[in-house]
Image 1: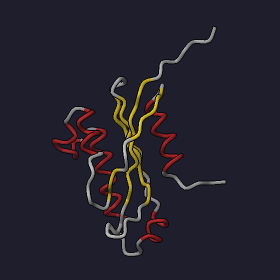
Image 2 (image 1 turned 135 degrees about the vertical axis):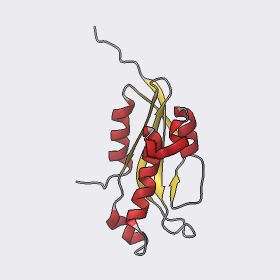
Image 3 (image 1 turned 90 degrees about the horizontal axis):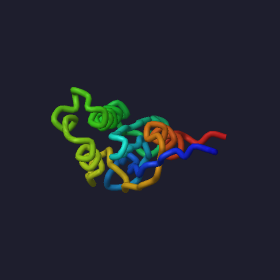
Length: 134
């Protein structure tokens, strides 16, 4: 008889880079994953500088990478995240996914089921952020 792997509900959002907010064009550059039952909050970020230059040749990839890393630091409770990194996991996820009009913006929150939220973050990065390869 096959063992049944328990799956728990998780929430995720894509981090989008909107280099020129007035144009509304964006580039997926990260994912945030939250699973309350597994006490997990994680992120994966990847900025494709070539694709960014297509949207806005004047965009600053170093500054944008810094903003993406700041979101990742809040997820991981890094010391540099300050007070935001010390909040409860759910509060951090809600803060990171709150709508904002900045260069790095969260997309809508979606849900799913997973047995491994860390592996789910990797899968979502490959599916939603990294360039498609043949």
